[in-house]
Amino acid sequence: MHKLILGMAAAMFLTTGVANADAISDRKAAMKSNGGAIGTLVKMVKGEMDYDPAAALAAFTTIREDMEGFEDLFPEDSMTGDTTASPKIWEDMEGFKAAVAKVEADLDAAIAAAPQDKAAFMPVFQQVAGNCQACHETYRIKK
Amino acid sequence: MKRIAAALVILAIAVAAVFFWLTAPNPLPVDILAGMDEGDAMAGERIFNAGGCNSCHGGKDPAADTLPMLGGGLALKTPFGTFHAPNISPDPDTGIGKWSGADFANAMMRGVSPSGQHYYPAFPFTSYARMKPGDVADLWAYIKTLPAVARANVPHELSFPFSVRRGLGLWKLLYLSPDPVVAIDETDEKLVRGRYLVEGPGHCGECHTPRSLIGGLDKARWLGGGPAPEGDGKIPNITPDASGIGSWSAEDIAYSMESGFTPEFDSLGGSMADVQRNIARLTAEDRQAIAAYLKAAPPVASSR
Image 1 (spheres, chains in turn cyan, blue):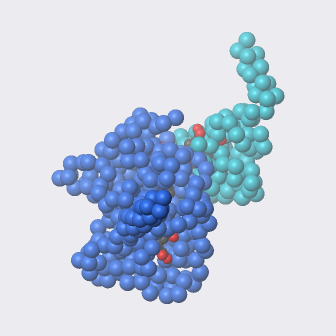
Image 2: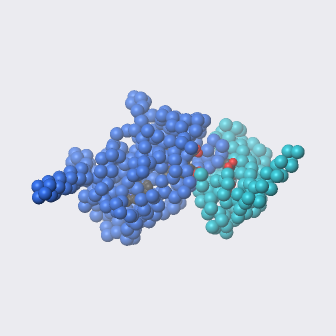
Image 3: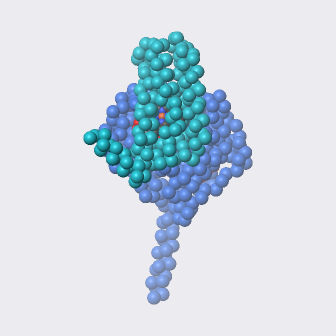
């Protein structure tokens, strides 16, 4: 029953063309998961948690998985609605895809490096974390 | 009939005289201007970062190892028209290389140009007016050490009556005041420092406080957020209200200014990204002072 109602609601959304709510919620979920993973890494950066190589690797892996195919979650009809994605994404899809490719490459390098101590971890973390603000600065807008 | 006409003429002259008198530029007193050419450039770099001059007058976040190039250029789109940030590099012809320290201080703290014209508040002198004269002198010393950039200024694109600078004199009577906005415990050094950074050089209120129809800051809703003054989007409420950042601890605020990450590990984006990178170049004590002040500011509920 629930599924039916959800299905009907989704169908209404799609037919009225308000916004592609699925893509929006999928990409937000991916980003929320990124936030959680970065949160674990920041705890280690700040020394609130001892450096744990396995936990760091797991967090980098989570973000890598979240970013896989992220650029496909931005169909034309998902520009408006409950989203903080900036119209710039659609104006400059090439640039946006390049930003996704850049964070993926940095994550691949982080996973390959699998830093074993905090000294090795810090620069790897900075390299990955810089992507979050760089992409948000250009391709996101708070409404 | 003739009498009425004569009276009207006299009235018009009187109104014009009062307008002229009220809108006359008001430069700084001589004793403050005297020390303006004796600043310390090293100390000025920190003020430059706190003041975010590079965000408008420089290029986009140059790498930390290159000197800021203050050739200007950023276009600020506002409801009144488009402003183009001018060249403030030490180039003598297209920049401000021929200025004295006194010229610079009058621009920063009174919004008055060397030729006695009013500046538009798109240049946030309404906040810089709260700066310490010594800091302005240090900033001037620092700016003079930066590379000269030859780039002619682009005129602003404003519609009447906003295109008339003289009228800004009236605006300044309403909105230009060097007094602090928030009353705090004046013996608490950390809070006093935080207030100085936020209300003065940091000019946080210029973006985070909603504006009146004629572009003045609504101090009753200080830091309460609202529509972005330029471009699209919304500026968040950064008061300690539940609809603001009441759930952030002082440590969360200081860390966000250092790292760019919010407590939910979202990141500070949009125009705040540049501000954050500048504030990250200040000391940890400065960031803690900013955080303490934001926790102590009066809570404002976001208007929805």
